Image 1 (cartoon, rainbow, N blue to C red):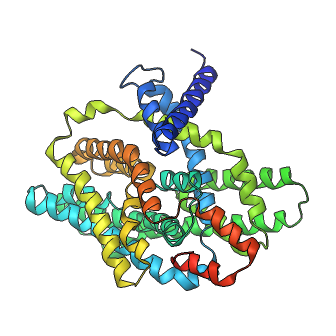
Image 2 (cartoon, rainbow, N blue to C red):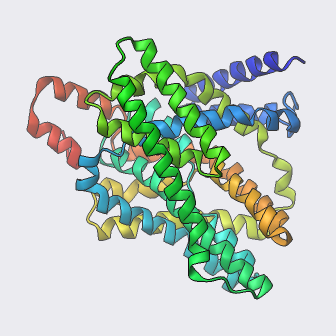
Length: 414
């Protein structure tokens, strides 16, 4: 079958999945993934493994758009006010997941140190895509929503650092060769700071160009060019396209008086990419791994979720975050996806003796969390009372009762 025809069918099936999910009060994302699963090799095989691999560029482009949108949440004046809270909540949920997973796999299940530390480090990263789309679908706004997107973005920075350190420690355990502390930290730090610097430079140039534009279509085109350049240069320089495009968005939102023109222009262009991204993600899931994942895989999934929940709970209480953030933040941090797959590739290259087992467990975790993660994210924003919060907030802005707006921002009753 012609590949363009297949892409069109995948897009149509994904859209149908979103509509069906809405009928049973599930997030659209869950519908995309579940129907996508039926399209893949696990069921009817409309899209085979080779075609899914060939279409990975669509997923990478969608992730770049998502990263750009998440960057808009890093407003400097908000970061000065809430940055410390976001940092410590992120640190808490990352440490919670990594420590709990490592402790159970190493001490309780008696696995090797190298295997335990690497698989534990891969529990840190969260997939921001599903959480972002659930928030947008339900027009959520409030303390939890304002906190969760920066946390999800920062958690990937922490995840890269933790994985880099874990891989170095694993190699010491396996080979006995002890690198210096600078060698352990150098590669992940170079990737992070290189990505942020590249994103900042592109963001500054984009900001200067946008100031000279007059038409809406020009905002869209120039923004898409910047996102594409950020993605392409990151891949060429072995940097992180995700972090680069987060930084482009962050730079833009802090240097323009009306940055929403650029963000809205991009958001109007990308819905089809999001549908394709999640539908293809569902198609790539292989349920046959359920036969081989074993007890370790099942325990990993539960330990990761519990670690993130407890870590975010303890750290949120410690920084005196709003009650809704303390209670429900952990539920919004469960999705696991793209970054973990990328880290699995690095494991295969650098620690091949553990690659098959680690990849199987990670893919099983992605199967569970990509399917159920959006549902937990919806539960979180629903329990926090933030569904349709954006509409309520906009109404308050029109009416100008400053005290009511402040109440919403601080998590009280409007």
